[in-house]
Length: 331
Image (cartoon, rainbow, N blue to C red):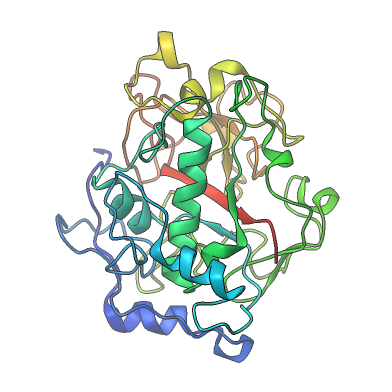
């Protein structure tokens, strides 16, 4: 079987709006005008994630990265762009469409998340910007909450080690539909977050509140759980070689970049002989630290093929597309 490394079709407008509006009772009101970016679709039947907006927030960026226009408006109003208090929304897994849209590539960012940022700590700042723009796409005004990517780095802006757990605030955190992710950091930093809403604990949702494992309910589940973290099972830096040069490089050169550490947005159970030979400190169910991906190059794989293939040095080799976890500093 050939692995798919191509743009996959997004949901239809009707399907995306239906999924995005499932949380209406919880106050969900921001279904986008368009369900995604069908451009470049190759007809793959492996499915896609949910309804990313046709426009990347109000910035329209396709890779250079600028702060979302909605962020500045929200900051002046102290809430949403209309001045109304925002709904609880402080966690998501970046969807495939949003990664493709903001990167300007069918293959995504890979391990280079600078998104127009430069200098020390550029990878982390760029990833934070990606989170904020995607949040703004889903809920206008949400970027004002200050979003942080759950990423560790060997060297931040001050040259010191950065642990993902120290970047994301103290909680509580909620998904796009207001479901509890964790009340505090102690509950969050467990194999699967303690006290997490049972409907999402084994399938973390994307920015639309849609399950990542089966983003299209009319299609089969997809193998897309490998999520970039560079982090161990305690929420701290896994290794200096586990961050794609602090999220600034995507060449796929193992000698210089190493192999990024990933967690599982949905757990892998019952793999038997398909389990990777070395999982480090994590487990196949750990959302922060499950295994070392094959490399830092851009790439997408949504077809179940087992653990990462050593010679296929992409962030998606083991089942994924280089997605990241995003947390807001306020609920």
